Image (cartoon, rainbow, N blue to C red; front, side):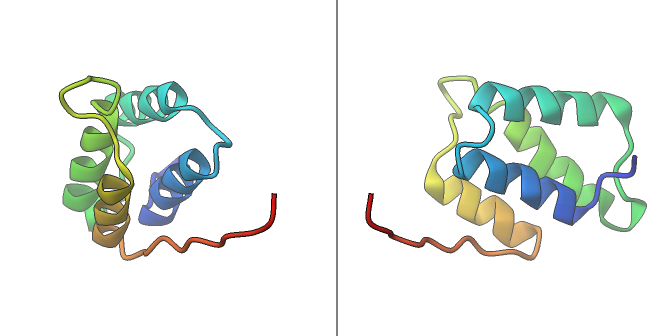
Length: 86
């Protein structure tokens, strides 16, 4: 499967929505990097974003809301927050 900006953005969104864990996001990004199946049209941007996600489980890097916002911006997306009653 060719990894596109949308696929990477969907993975970040899944993490932000607590559908996947940080560990799962990191594992996914590491497997994508090893596969080398990035969309050639956006390979540089995709490689940068996926590589950053791949080190998110290292204490020195982590993954904050702001990091996700920046990474999504590089992919051409923006996060949106909805606050609802619990």
